[in-house]
Image (cartoon, rainbow, N blue to C red; front, top):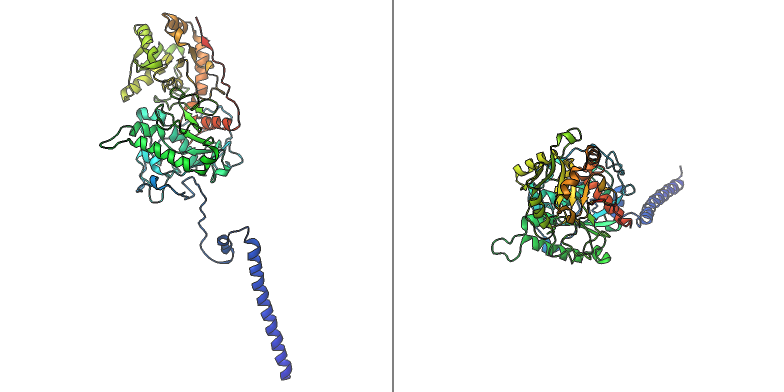
Length: 490
């Protein structure tokens, strides 16, 4: 081949190769510039470079599968320690009667299916599980809730009756865990803009029960300090500022919980035992939800529940007799009923033997007296319900859980306090309720008792699920209209 022709061929080949290389480089940068507005550069690099995946951390998480931490004000920083786990025994409930969005598992639960979407602040453990002596590990806020047998245990005794904060928080944490089988009534979301409400994870009742006394030379109690820090934290949050707190949910089930700051936080939605120690502007049925106490006595299964003939005691009451304010009626009824042969009306405590006696006594009584104490409500009502002992509600100002969907008159007897203290009235009323009428209420008790069970994981129609449903009705703007109570009269 002539030398001139050979040089021309080499030149053409070089130009072609350079052109192809330039075309490839240009296409690469054009592709990057087109998609970059839609995909972060860190994510884009994963498509073209062999590097480790990016650990993307949104603003909030469930504390289990997504390790996300939000900034914590300096005043709320805490020490971190190795995790210590305690067992908690799940309850087994099989009777289901409330219509819910059931799911086989959390794979079936999504933002579109959940009745309620909640954003939960990642507050330091000292506000929640740290109060249970749970020790958080480095950069850890929440315990691992994937195994129900290894979550921090709530203390027993009278502490347990106001443990609602614990059960609701556990349920929220597990709502993003696929291994946990639970109803799809609520799901935790990653950003406040996705949420119907903002959940505040402060164990206010436990804080009061454990830390309301001033220790040593300190000027204020830990409970008071935590409440002050809670207010400071919330008032700095953009979500609180935006809504004035109206979309925040705070659990304050013990009547003395949040005692120092409840008025400051009164715009929020409370989950309460009753309104006995709240002003009407701070707490009311238009915005707040009444939750049942955690019962203290053991539940009785439907199969082992004693019928009419096997309950020799007509009426049962065991508890504190001498109370103040509205509870003075207990003392009056004590003197009226204490000598009746088929009535058990005595002083009782929450010690281990007292709980056993109450379990046995309620399970062999036809009627259980729920009398107003220092506040309109008490856990005695819910002990009666799970014992299938027909409650006799003598508390004029009581508000009852889920009363817009449950008709308590179907399984309870309502008596005005002024009638109950009339000599002979109460005993004549209860003795006049014959076997057929009592059995009808007894059967209804067995049907509804599971609505008053707290458990982890939650189950459709249990107490946790019912509370979420009640809050969902609040979100929908449905005004609560409670079922008509039928009061027994002379």
